[in-house]
Every structure is written in C-alpha cells, then in structure tokens.
Amino acid sequence: MATRQNIGDILMGFGRISQEEVDRALEYQRENGGYFGEALIALGVVSPKEIEWSLASQFDLPYIFPEADSVDPEAVELVTPEWALAHLTLPITKTGSAVTVVVDSPIRSEAVDKLAQRTGYEISLALASSSHIRELIREVFARTPDESRAERPTPISLEEGLALTLSAVSEAFGISTRGRRSIFWYDDGGVIRRRLLLPQWSPQLDAFMEPSPSDRIEGRDRAVFSGRLNRRGMVGSVNVRYLADASGEELLIRPVEEAATTDPGFSLPPDGIVSEVRLLARAGAGRFIVTADPMDLGHDVLPKVPDVLLDPHWRSIYVHDQDRSVSERAFSLRLPEEEDQWAGELNALHGFRFDVVTVDLQGSPDAWLAEALGIASVAFVLWPAGADRDAARRAGIRWELNIAKGSDDQLEWSLNPVS
Image (spheres, rainbow, N blue to C red):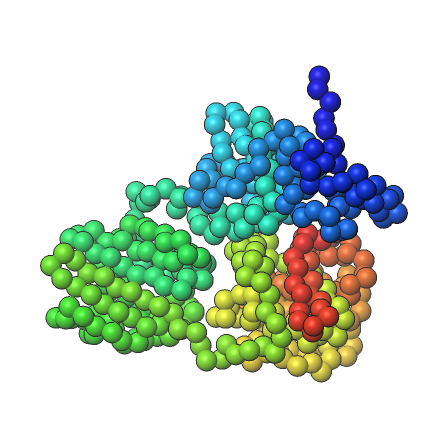
C-alpha cells in the first residue's frame, strides 16, 4: 500500500515551498497548535487555495469547481440548507446507491459519515474551497427543488408566482404569453426561473395591483407605467413595461426600492452573508445570536439588522430594556424595569405574528429567551461575546452572526454555527 505524502512533501515536490519554510511552519505549529497547512497560511507562505489543492492531492481526491446548474437536485434533497452550511458539505450527484459529496476538507469527515449512516448511500468525496462551497449552497438552495428542471408540468397561480419573487428577493419578473400558453418568469440572483402559469392570471393581476394593468394596456401594443403591487400582503411600488404584437404579449415588472432604504450609517455585510441569512430564514432556521466587538457596536447595529439582511417589507419588532436608537422600519418596544414582568410582556406579542424580532435584553436569557423567540420565526438576539452559548443552544439557536469593527472602522461580518 502506497504511503500517503504529507502536505509539506507535496508542496516541496512542486517547488512551492522550501525546507526552511517547512521548518518555520513546524515551529509555528508547535507553539500555536492546529494543522500544518494552517501554519503555512498563517505565515503567509502559501494561500488557502494551495492548501486545499494539496489536500486533494494528499487524499487522492478530485479538486473541483462545480456550477449550480450541474448539481443533481435529487442529491441536494438529501440535506437541508442549514445542514449544508453548518458542515460546508453538499451532495452534488446521485447515481443508484452512490452519492458524490463536495467538502472543504477530507479530514473533518464526521458529517459525511453521519450522512452515509442516515441515507445508506455509498459516499464518494470531492474537494472544493470553502468559499466556493458556500456560494454553491446559496445558489442551489435559492431555487425550489423542481426548478432545476426545465418546467414543472403543473402550472402555478399568479399568487404563487409572486410569492416566489418574494422568496428570491427578485429584482425583475414578468409574464410571457404565446397563444393560450403563459409563462411566469423571475430573476433569482441572476438566474432566470420559469414556471407555467394558470389561465385567468390577468384578472388576478388587476386585483393585486393599483392602478389596474388592464386599464393601462387595453388596445395598446406598448405601455410604460408605475403602480403598487400586493404580494402576499407586502405592498410595494413597481415599474411596468408592456409589449404586444401578433405573436403574443410580454409584461416586465421591476420592484422599486422604497425611499426609506437609506444608508444605515455603517458598512453593509457582504452579499454572501445576506444570501445565507435569507436562505436560513426561508428554510425555517433563521434564529441567530448576534455578537459584537465592541459590545456597544451591537447595541447600535442590532435594530437595523433586519433592514440590511432581510426583505424590507418584513414586519419587524425591536425589543429592549434601555433607551436605544431604533430603526424607522421596526416597531420598537421597551420592556418595564421589573424583569419578572418580561415573560408576560413578551408572550403578549406572540399574537401579532411579526416576521422578525431583534432582542437586546439584560439579565439571564433562561428567564426570557423562549418567550422572545416565540414572537417571530426569524430572531436576532444580542449576546455578549464571552457569554456561555448553552442557553442559546437549548433554545434551538444554531447560528452566530458576529460584527466587529476593523482597524479602518469598517464593519467585518461573519456567520458561523454556534460553537
């Protein structure tokens, strides 16, 4: 049986590092712990991608760059988006009883072993960078399971189509009609999704939109107008363009950003974190503790977190126990000073069915956390960075959103499973 080469030998064999650099990395590893590859990265000797490629070579695994459109939907259905993000592991192909899973490290195989036990499939590994896997997970789960196929045979209603645009935070969507056949399409992060549309969509659009589109396009082959569109109770401004000729009709609708979406006063999170938070929220796993460095930063940013991470039309409530700055979009409620009244106050908010709750409370979380999480399906709870996470885990919170102020006063955002 061939002896597996270590990463140092592989990189030296390709002339990428010297023996002196190997010795430096070994000394760093002895003093700081961790893996040898991590020591090389920390010393600036090699890049993370070079270590990932070396790991693939060391374990005789393919190092791949899969695209979302090439991922097998049946393989993806074996896991949830939360599980995939938590383990940076995604099934990408399924053939018979065999599944290929892309991972960011062959060393951390516990998640893959559990997947094999749960599904009974034979698992083959492929390696990709952690950043590529995260992006792949976001893109794959942004679509519904059947949307990777050309079209579903069962048409959807216009109301269902509009709901899809909300989930995807679509910047454009529309309707194409040829004869008796209508297609609802929408932009899903740069990918156009298409669904067959049920007949009689035009009267429904008139009911959802003011002014009535039919009044604006009747007898015309060109029209441009604005209006207010109701999508599952979320009403917003849209711009509309209409084209028609003998071959059919085209309707293009673009939501307009509301004027209230102004600069929040701090640097925004990367698009990747925004996508992942929205993905977890849609998957029913949108409960987060929010840690900040310094802590005062958390008090300032927390009320505006829903504004920058979620759809601005979501109804949010900010619950706190001290005078704090608030967001114009969130309803704000200050609890009484007596902590023994908090549970009752929080419980009374459950019936309002808010979409999002942000919580900035002092005292022991065990006394109020469960009631606070019951206010909305998506929750952001400010948590002292050094505080024990056990109460959060017991309450079902699995994700930590960290906000730190960098040396240039720009905010640095990160999202990770609760440790």
